[in-house]
Image 1 (cartoon, rainbow, N blue to C red):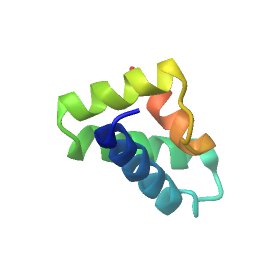
Image 2: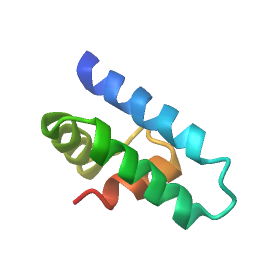
Image 3: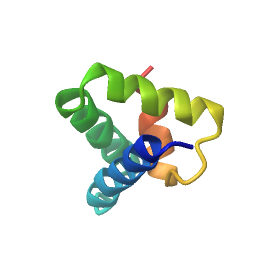
Image 4: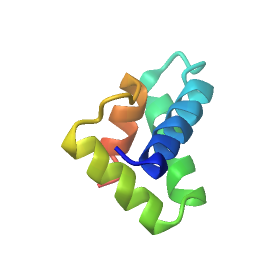
Length: 71
């Protein structure tokens, strides 16, 4: 895992922490996905998707669900 990957994991988990306040986890996952699609550049999105497919270690459950929807 690279330092850049560590940063992407932290960012994804931080976004997920924000949306985790939503009681409906479907809405929360869509919120995380939507935020990443709007704000992150394509290379960042591709990197977190690839990491999630490789192991996803360190990603929260909500982050994993949201990243899986980015495909």
